[in-house]
Image (cartoon, rainbow, N blue to C red; front, top):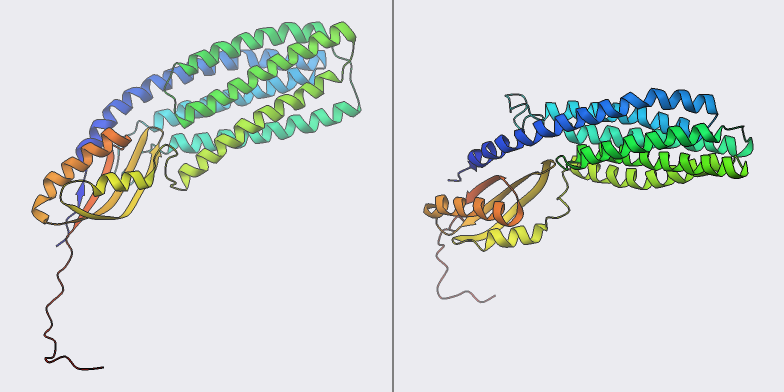
Length: 313
């Protein structure tokens, strides 16, 4: 008779510490949101008045930063909700969905910047380089402060997506400063859209990388730092275990891994000790705290009397 054991104790213990991390992360994201949103309007007005695409793109980027940070803060709050009868894991996947939305939002923003830049390369516009430099320097300072605040928080997919927005915005500020200096010193205005294209290309690389990671989580892929063969080997080496099959490892949310497997035992009486050893080994060696294992004992084949003497074929 097969038995099923679910590691409720380990899961609840992990949840208590995880809730504390989410609380701190939520406060960090709110501070970053207020800093970013406070400057987005100023930069938008300055970009429109000076005629700089680099500043307008940076302003649009800061607006998306604000929405991304707000979404990330909301997702971090939702992730703290306890499990329920309808959501047995809680709402920890809200962080992953927020990271997915933010990465897609980045791709939309990149498309907007590229289209505007290509139009302006063909038809250069007058740009007030001095205004561009002054506003971009302030924007860069704010972005660096926000990036510092985010880097001190918990490093989840959600916070990484928000940090990606901010770092991309900092690159936009650097591009705007460079464009302003070139325009003031040489009067060559095409530098503004050209640098905007360069920033868009840099952001695209990071956005696609993050999107790939998010989709891997949503597809229940094995976490990148976990080697499934090694996990199976470690389980098979436990005392009393004959064989391991139906082994699965996936990510519930950033920092929370889950495992399920069937263990074929030599003696079902050894199951309590085997289960405890498996839970401890998975947590210590692979950082997997949510472990679900099912024990199995191979059924003995009935004896069948063969004809004697043997029949020649």
